[in-house]
Image 1 (cartoon, helix red, strand yellow):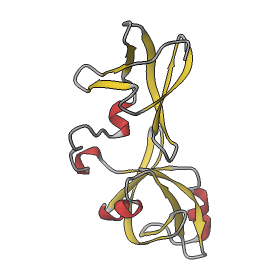
Image 2 (image 1 turned 30 degrees about the vertical axis):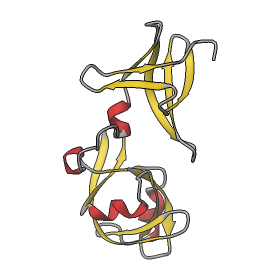
Image 3 (image 1 turned 120 degrees about the vertical axis):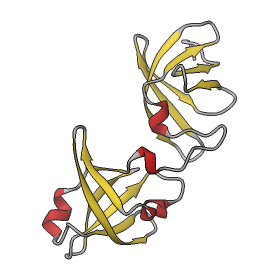
Length: 160
């Protein structure tokens, strides 16, 4: 859902970069899981505000600047069961990670390892035996997204 950019003020507030459609969507969740890889801890959301480039949030368990600063770079997540269902033709990034990407010739280009937001559109970051490939996540290049079989069909050649 985002990551901690660092401390905000001296009372334990954190700056958060939100990877959500609406920046303040994180405020809808009473418990945030903050951490990395296999080390996650729950934090109770207490208060927050939207600023021009990030959110600032107060978590019940974080009371000082040092604690807040120590969280810099950690990811912010919420349990998937708490998220609203995706609309038709929309996908949570976490659902796309790990999917095989197959082109029109039937060649597997690799797996989705990440997505990037560019402002104009999202971009699939694919890694495989052909190296890293970036494909804009737009209808001109991305066809069927089969969440059941974990495959994405694309109009993309190795020479693009």
